[in-house]
Amino acid sequence: MAVNTKEIKQRIKSVKNTKKMTKAMELVSAAKMRKAVQGALATRMFATLARELLEQLASGNKPTSPLLEERPVARLLVILITSNRGLCGSFNANIFKRAWQILQDKTNVARHRGLDGKDIIPLSDVAVDVIGVGKKSATFAKRHNYPLIAAFDHLSERPAFEDILSISSMARKAFTEKTYDKVVVMYTQYNSSLSQTVKARQLLPVSPHDLEKMLVVGEKAEEIPSLKQNGYLFEPNPETIIATIVPRLVDIQLYQAILESSASEHSTRMVAMKNASSSAGDMINGLTLEFNKARQAAITQEIAEIAGGAAALE
Amino acid sequence: MNFSLKIVSPDGPTFSGEVESVSLPTAMGEITVLSHHVPLIAVLASGEARIKQGNETIFLSVSSGVIEIRPDNTVYVLAETAERAEQIDLARAETAKLRAEELMKQRDRMDDEQFALVMAKMEKELARLRVGKKWRNVG
Image 1 (cartoon, each protein chain N blue to C red):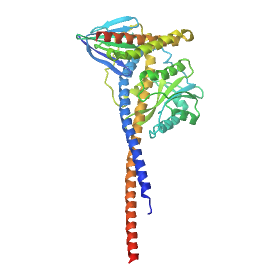
Image 2: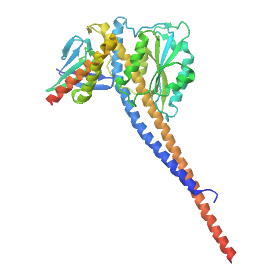
Image 3: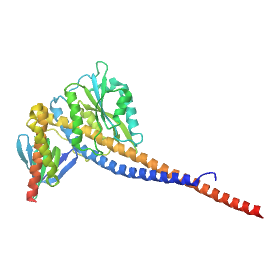
Image 4: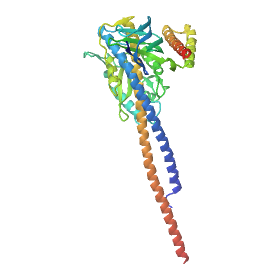
């Protein structure tokens, strides 16, 4: 007997087990993805309202807040959002690759784009530090030798707003203390379950322009009629309101980025697991065919042996 | 006369609908908004929001944010957290309050900023407890 049928049988069994597992992971990821997408959409309404409010306030007189200050960049902080777990296809590889590409051109990242075409160009070479969200972010910092100043790997699949406050308050504090002159968040944007793109967005100083870019893409949330400016009363005064709203904008932008990343992670995992399940199916088919062939060959051989034996007796 | 009210938190809209009046805590004291209120932007404080809708009164606990009353008879409340009274988990609120109290005791070892944070948290939890308990007594 050329091929051992027992061995093939065992392999079929193990592949079947793997298939069961990947199938289950696929279903779990699909459910988690749906939740994350819902969360991202729900956040969008709050973010849109807050951004409009800021613009409304900014149109009257230029708001002053330490979080809005644009200064030449000497030190840049990157918040890199990755996954906690593996088995999610090229999700982490993609964000690493893109982040590396973006950071190659440091002057470009560090530049403040003025809406009137006036840019603030960094004075000297830019130092880059990384805050990692997700366990895999440490790999990136280590590989490219960026100092990893903090890593947050305790976030759940669908983080609550309060969970991310520690990250954003850390970034805000570092910015107001002028440790960093610009904070950029890199995340994976969820377009659909088949397409996700890696994006880099300015978190600090707060830029209504970047916020808007982040909010308008993807699925539309409920349409809100825009503010018209006429005779608003302010209580107690516009400054206090700006001081309340600006930090919230930072929080919400980061929250949005994390939710988008989470949705992307689950959808890439879902697709990867789907592929794995279908490959396992193919493998089972191939192995079954081989098993049948081997079984048939064994029977044929046996018959031939019996016939041979009978012929020898005559 | 009714107007439309939306209470939005980062986790999504908590309340949305046509209401008769709403009372909200602000940094300068409680205000009650009726239909055709003058356009106003105010800072929301932690506390209890009361919404009157027909014969019903809905209680919510809200914490820091902004109130925006627009000229077109709509009111938006942007709150960091907003919870309906019936959704408040009293046990969780109680433990959170105790934790905040514990932190307050260590005041000497804190800088002003940290103290302000703890203070805000404390106020938020107290508001949740108050609203949650009230609802349970009524209901």
